[in-house]
Amino acid sequence: DKALEIFKAALDIDPGLASARLGIGNILVEQGELEQAASLFRAVFDSGRERVAALCSLSQVRKVQPGDEVIALLEKEALASETLPDEKASRIHFALGKAYDDIDAPDKAFPHFLEGCRLHRRHIRYDAQEKSRLFARQKAAFSKDFIDRNRGQGFASPVPIFVLGMPRSGTTLTEQILASHPDVFGAGELADFTEIMPQGSDVIPQTLGDLGRQYIARLRAYAPDARRITDKMPDNYFHIGLIHLALPEARIIHVERHPLDTCLSCFTRLFSHPQEYTYDLYELGRFYREYRLLMDHWRAVLPSGAFYNLRYEDLIEDTETQARRLIDYCGLEWNDACLTPHKTRRIIRTASLTQVRQPVYTSSVAHWKRYERFLGPLMEGLGDVWKDYSDR
Image (tube, rainbow, N blue to C red):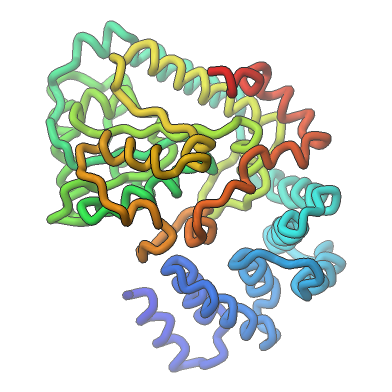
């Protein structure tokens, strides 16, 4: 509301200010007002100011259809992209890749995703070796012995529901189903837990209770009267051991999706928040493998039932059964609103914010097969972790 007020104040000074109009359009997208947002983005494009940003936003807000003029407009911008800063050129290529993917033209789509990632990747400092060492240190710090010795020292509260997993794995849809329940407030992707947590070597029994209390105080500020509040920061999978100790009554929902679908969806998305490992196919596969090994570690060192594992494919195939199990796991009575999550009006600020405004659909399952011929480096980075997904 405050942002909208400021954007409108800016427009009172300069009615044609493109950045303010684009800002309002982005707020409309987050609110689920997609048609209004599309109209505003098109008007900004037609004004001739911030054409690239407006056109890219327009391509993202709706599914592109065959013959849609947005493709021709993007192609025209792409011809001049060599004269643009890498940031703008990258956006054009991601938008074109998405447009061609929408019309089922993978041979045209993937070269644009590759070029978009290449342009973005050369401005990123990412050390895959250091990332591997970070995963190794986490597993060493949270051994089974450490967890067993420190259990029972946290702050008991049933309020938090953590929804976590790799980006693009189905966490937004899962939270949207939960947030459709009248007793659940969907707080979205929160940085609160990582902002207040101690470093691994500093985790001692005395700090666990304080950590839990501080987190609940922050969480309560979002919705003081809600019975349950979701925290959908995907990266919290890295901290499952600490969450288990600090908040022993928290519900933890781990969402997983086929590794190739997850990674492809990451690679074809220009994230607004840093996800440095997603712009190179091999690095992405290697990172996913580290994530998967960490999840295997949590299963080994935590007691059975410490977290709930949900497969995206199962949720898509039988939404009602899986939704009922989710609600039951969270200790709540069933509510039919959970079957129509696309109708729930709330602010969503994730990469899936337009997808969850639609009824649950199946076209994203096994999407990777359309691009299989391009995914050799990804498969190499993943190793064998993707081959047994269906059997686990």
